[in-house]
Image (cartoon, rainbow, N blue to C red; front, side):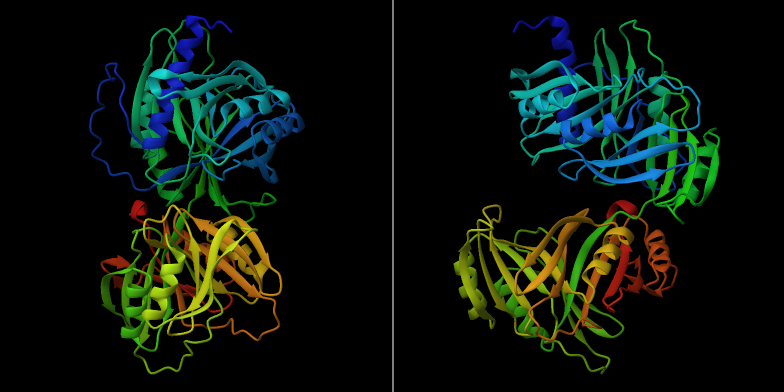
Length: 559
């Protein structure tokens, strides 16, 4: 197939966008725009692009294309004040959500004129493009290798409503994910200033595509959302930048403070933040503003976080420390004396995953350290040698590592000196070993799953039933080790209540998380506004339905 020079000019920004979005940096070989003047007003919040919304003319057809053609999965349907929304998540569970919006208020909207784009990263761009085409999309330029950028494949297409779809090859994708949303803006510099100085996004790249468009690529300091690309066309084509049927949903550490910042910047608050009465959003804070081009900004409370540390009680701190350092290669990070316990904090040999906190209680309260129905999962490069190291360090191997055909990995089990279950998983990605998951026993598996997903914001990765043993949900936060919720099904009595276990939870908004826990009906022990601090960080405490302690601290990107 012969390609024209016009096609090649469209390919250039896609490859550079890949570099920017995946590395968080990069540079253009063209002169950047002038540096904006410094803003001396501190940004009062941290925010990220939690979802984007695009208007569609046929909701059912759009859902079919985005699920069957772009690999997304439907999460839920919402009936909003003036529209139906179908919320979609990428196949890989990465990036911002996509809301397909069908308006019900009778106001005419042109959904064919969006001057932006949606960028999807795919492990196999050719298969992805064929899948998109077969589901009703239109490929305008098949994926082509770009020799100047390492042979990355890039292609373009259009959905039924003429939205530009950019397809970029990415070996890190399991299947595909929504990596960036391009927003057409009438004044590129003013839009850049607004989204960086008021919303707190960070400029990662400026691209000038001669004869086509200029764009700024912006990212949030909070990880996990898609990039926002501000685009202004320079090819003399007529583009409508005003009042397009587009929504940017921003999750904020303090949405009230963000609303105040928007007002101070000259933007009207079209609907003040208030608990929503809309089905599916009951009691969630929702407010509306807009940018200078009339794009709708929906403000939400953000709580994004992760398991920063997992704490287990021990009767013998020295024996436990020896086991985890000599048997599993962990390193001691620090020691703390808390109100009712002494803690030793450990880090994995590979410095990956959450920290492990060994807790020896000093308050004289009786606790059984040997009845914890959970587990600690370590990914190791040499399971057989690690099993021998566990025994030498004072542990017990209950099931020697062996290949599991159904999982295609080597798995073994053991016990630490306090009878905690240790699972060893062979992994070629482990240089030595790392603490990959922490399992806690729960009395009601589905209720616990709903609490940790709906209230704490974890993402469900997998439901795994182990016949004759236990069922478990594997959940993942924005970093750290996975949290595994376990309920035993082998008729052996287990104690799920008030075990000497804690979850150190890092959140972009401890106050927002505490509010959500209260709304969920669980117990808040201490709010973040108390005088209690840990390493100069305010500490909050709550408990889940089984009494597992949640120690809540700010995330590094939430301070």
